[in-house]
Length: 159
Ligand SMILES: [Cu+2]
Image (cartoon, rainbow, N blue to C red; front, top):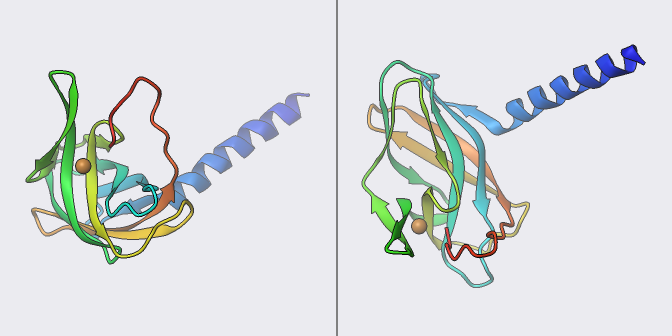
């Protein structure tokens, strides 16, 4: 009984490690780690979508995300979704700072990378390569999986 319990725990830990290896990306200077990047599946014929992820700053210096590019989209903007008098609005941001030894979560209803002018329809399961650039010249290439996302009810936000 005890043996099975430990096998279960060991299996669980191995599973977590495999997940981290699969979905974490580290920048050329090892200062940035991207966890679990994903792209929201857009409705048919929609030209825009959004990318989400956790950006971790592993360094003792602040990092500033300044731009992102992808072959799958003509243009990528940094957006923040804000509640403006009860209306959810997306505000373009010139950059996204990540404090030293801190992290920023890009998620539906908050920060996101706005993917504009898609070059082809993306379906759940497809992969999208993104190149993220930082103010100090550091950059990182990540592969984000396209996933379906249904917003919770009573939530009228789009991104
Ligand atoms: Cu947006």
